[in-house]
Image (cartoon, rainbow over all chains, first blue to last red; front, top):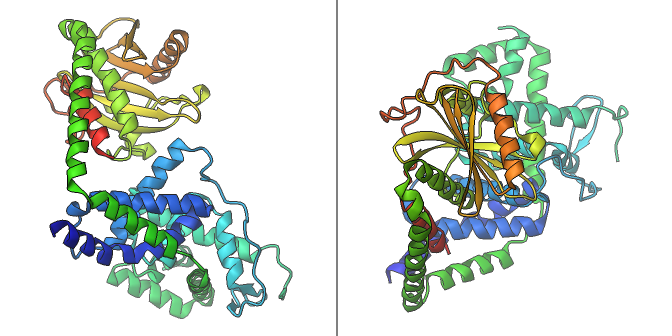
Length: 177
Length: 290
């Protein structure tokens, strides 16, 4: 019964974040199979260390921390895991209604912004994703990635700047669909 | 506040990471500066686009969710089988422990060689348990630590041997604290460098090569420092690496203060202990992971 209630508690607290973890892993690693393997290993470890997790604290951030640890180990053991910018593996979508002017003369689609992140380094891509998409605080991101908070700030600063530069340079004025 | 300062703070402002006073200063500047407020708007829209598009991206997790739950249920089910697994693990630990004692016995009786054997055991343990034990990978932090442990020129660069991504921890071998740096390499086993300042290690470089637990261990002493290199490479490569490391760490005049290892006043409070049977403890930890 103790084991059952522990499992129920784990499922209710931790399993609900599986989509966030999977989505982030796919974006960081670039391969769905690698991402699923990483998420599976993350939950195994989380289950084993669940007793050390303080109820009421940020479970999602805790899981992200485990996951990035798993990614770090996988990176060391498998040279195929990309750390540099990913190749574009998806074509930019068409007909997206998510269109906003990032610059008065340019027209950027949401899909382009997402695809442009694949051209960032893994370090920059990870921080950008965790802050902007997963909405973690700088402090949480620093704990997840096990880097100083200053490193988070500088990587995020550069990531956003580089993303904007990639989206707004080399485009003809007024280019659209 | 000028535009340069505002540009540096704009992202912190939009992420609500500034203190109240600085937030007001940035806001005042944005109210007056069209250029900077335009930049803020651009970043806000860029983030918003990314967030919205990421939210619309299909992520199939049902199969994975079921797979994870099935795995957890299998992991936690059938306690009887778990006990049998534990007993099997315990039996293997006893056997391994006996083998290790047999292998280490000659070294236990010879003090110098014991440090060598412990270094080899620690190398094996850290390599396999890397995921669990936090190490220092930040370059600056590691460089400061290295200089406190006899590596006057900081962390040696071994990239020409294929070893990169140094990761450091403090370890205790017999009675002294060492800085243990693990270097990783693609396609080959990692390499360990143990270093400490040692007032008793005077004079020119003295190199000794030993074999421990299937690894080559090169002990280098002299110039008030002691280093051990543990690697699975052959004797010649191990010696070449040791000489290279020695040359590189001695590039700066050795101004490093001798770390008060013997008195226990180390650089950082966290030190992984490595008793005589450290290899056994590490092996049991490895078995119990699965």
